[in-house]
Length: 496
Image (cartoon, rainbow, N blue to C red; front, top):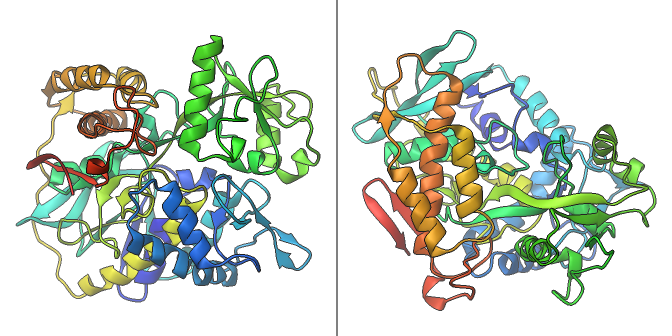
């Protein structure tokens, strides 16, 4: 979404090339169920949306970024509607839902649980109608090209021909999405291997807040089924979390019970699993009506795997879902490398702080995607570099599944010094070699490895628990860590 929105802004300025690693629609945006948050209802305002975002961010939100997000949100949504986006309505008015940690009903949905798919559809349709935008699918960007410390293009791996293609550009936007596939259990699609963070890191950019990974509380936990996301909107509609005995264990744990912030719910699920010895807990919708109509995609997917949500509770377990941190940017998507921009989940503007407020991610993609496109216009008249070079980078000799198991076990929802230190030691010891004919999966492992290492390093340095980062050896927040972590090739983890 962020990339498409930026491309639309850039199209009137010059030639725009949109590269996608897989098909153009294969991204976390496509699978976003919960909705898009915006202060548009009669009983809401942007100040309340800002307040809820700051509270969820647990003391680490960049207030200026939050102000931009909530203030520009209403106009951004109206623009999407003008471009043909169809949101659910009650009569002639937009229908607003409630999700965790929101003080008002401000979540817009499309077809109940297909909001991301509808937004991608309308943005792609708009972008494809503009003559200056060209699309290339199945072209996985592997490295940024550099000239005198500036980004001057990118290398892309053509999956159909198994060759690298050099692309020169006057500016580059990373809209590569998340890093959920760093973890064994994740709701993210296969393409979410942290590519943008890894490429930026190799090129010398500053990475920020990477220790803050949000684990969604309710991923489907059925044998033989993918870790399909069971949207927070289900709990917003009244679904309960229960243990095997049928007890609602979130009662008394937080005044919002099942609608507490995601990190709170996820940790309580893990604690309940450890207490009972079970493999999962259960999300109970059997007392609700209209589930097949209001959540058709979720209902049909569960039914495909033999689970009828109207008759039996769904087994659920937390899974890696969203990265609050990423490539450090300013409020106009500029990274610390000249002519390199980042927007969407790959970027860290500080808008999410330590824990993203539900359904703010799609709004961020639209608002900051537009801001990125506006800012990148300044490079339209700059010539491209003739012979830029990629940074050096060999391939780690470790399997993807081994990396993901290590990250899940030692840098997952519950962390401690011993596990993080061991993970850092093991990852640093992995040998690196050149490969004569690397494939896309080799490039993905080459990206997962440094991203996992950076998560562990940042997690070890942050000696506290805050938002999505939980340390059993430092279970409380500490005022000296009410700062953002930063790390780059040239500097260790620092807090500022």
